[in-house]
Length: 393
Ligand SMILES: Nc1nc2c(c(=O)[nH]1)N[C@H]1C(S)=C(S)[C@@H](COP(=O)(O)OP(=O)(O)OC[C@H]3O[C@@H](n4cnc5c(N)ncnc54)[C@H](O)[C@@H]3O)O[C@H]1N2
Ligand code: MOO
Image 1: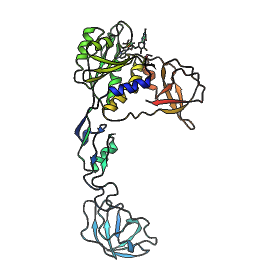
Image 2 (image 1 turned 90 degrees about the vertical axis):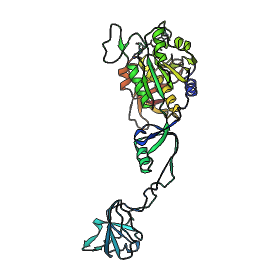
Image 3 (image 1 turned 120 degrees about the horizontal axis):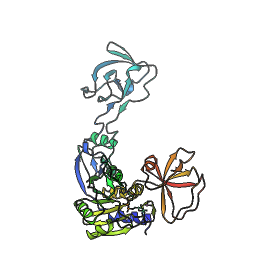
Image 4 (image 1 turned 135 degrees about the vertical axis):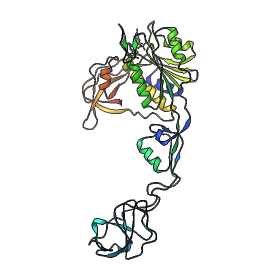
């Protein structure tokens, strides 16, 4: 059995980059930028008014100065010609500031009578002008790799970049195995349950940027598993759930091996998640997850997400964080344990409480947890108040 750290290094070595493709900005949310995006213009393109008021020459910004309004500039509609001392230009937020102007006086600070404004007793403290290029300049870049958020899309649009080069979404073929499984909406027969893993894992893979192909449930027969695995052709990553352990009905490793799986490892020192396997099968990476839903989740969180990130050119961004134990915990065994836990605000660090029941079949407990509390291999008992590591989930 290899360690969790060795397993992570090995699965990352199994992941291959998907390569770049070009997409419209509207399709770029959540995609990983794969080449620099270059600003096609300078922003703002001109000195722009930041307030509604009057543009004046900097030297005229004196208490009580009286100035003549010579015209108007609004956003999208500038004023032709420069401003000279003694003149003011009615101006609105976003409008180009004319040459010669150095200050925009807020309209609520002046008194206007006909075409004349009188400045207040205290000079305007700020210029209220956004200089050209203050935001970014022509040729400046947004650098890869980067998972694009709404804020990045706003920036790219402002940069006048209509399309971006991103990593192709990894295609994940997702295969649940087990005679006991039916899909949500079906009526389970005697001894059957609903395949929650299919939906849990599909959602996790999609959150990590994958394009998920959900294969039909494979039954616990050689023929059914062969047929279903055959449908994974063309995927970048094959993910199975169930059938990974040692029982007679746990066929995944054997059948996958017959179909060309080059196994990197099977079984790791992790709890839950011991039966995890990984390798490469044809042109795809292969990750065989345990069937217990919490085990499948923990393995997907620790291994599937980093694999998908690596395939898109991103480092894994899931830092180990620290919290204070809200209650005492017992000793651990030889495997690294990941306990479902809840976080609460604390003085210096958050306080963490392991969920009552750590059975790896309990999806209701998993749904209420917000962290995986990490217990090292062979750790002793820990008292309330001790500092421990956790992962946010
Ligand atoms: N003698 C041993 N028995 C088991 C061992 C062991 O070392 N020796 N390991 C245990 C551990 S740890 C785990 S985890 C499970 C994992 O086994 P499998 O990967 O072979 O999973 P299954 O047996 O197929 O299923 C386990 C459990 O999970 C349920 N399941 C399966 N698929 C789904 C799904 N898509 N959605 C929801 N639930 C699913 C299944 O019905 C079983 O209850 O093995 C232990 N046994
Ligand atoms: O890993 Mo099993 O993965 O302990 O439930």
